[in-house]
Length: 83
Image (tube, rainbow, N blue to C red):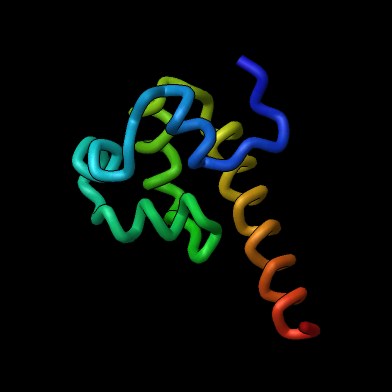
């Protein structure tokens, strides 16, 4: 599976897992998962491990995906402030 520059949302899609299912599997709220997917917030370290386990991928891939989503969101915020 190619994972470079993928977001958590893209990794979840590849695993056929929606936000509610992931939230249920790791004991988090669906809103929290949505915020991670869209780069609005980041999960705690223990949650990164749980997400990785639920998706069957390495923690480093999940951490990178969250960073990609956060970077994209920051660019959108910056562009909107300049708009």
